[in-house]
Image 1 (tube, rainbow, N blue to C red):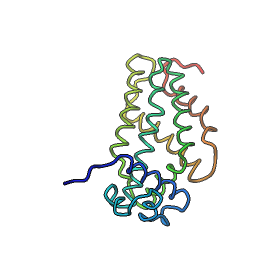
Image 2: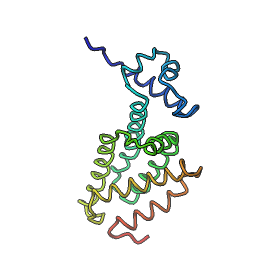
Image 3: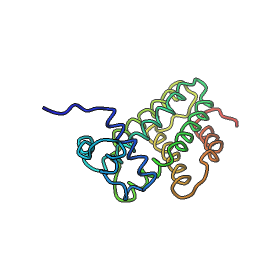
Amino acid sequence: MARKVDPEKREAILKSARELFKQCGVEQTTMASIAGKAGIATGTVYLYFDSKAKIIDALCDYYLLDNIKAVAPEYENTDIQQAISRGVHAALKHASENADLVRLIDQRRSIGGKTNRPQADRIVQKTLREGLAKYIEEGSMRPYNIVVMAELISGMLEWISKVCFVWSDVDPMRYEDTLAEMLRHALLKNYKG
């Protein structure tokens, strides 16, 4: 009989791993140390994640999906200028609050990992495309290729996060006003500034 998955144990494993990765680094953190911090047996960790890389992948997915939860409500704003400003603010604030995960994603990529993010990436891109499509359909936004525009916007936000938390220690909010203004100029049909 297959064991029933306990979401609380899974979350305890991820929380413990995240804390240990921040404190000790990925290389020094072992599955046994993650289990010890979570208060469970090492074998139990392996029931949920067969490797440390899978734990990293889950944390990367968490970051992406949590980011879209923070940003998506801003797409509901009927004023596209406010939606852009608030969306940029929410995305940069989320990155600031999760700088350790931004670094973890970058570290995983730098060692050749793709972070197993296809599902999370698809959800992020789909949500962004839907938000852009709404404004194009109502006529307030230029009719760009939505797929490309969603990739460009998320790429800019990812680059800012990398600059601030991987390459240096800079507050990402310094980019907020300029990025929002640039997006308003690029996206809005009748924007005068």
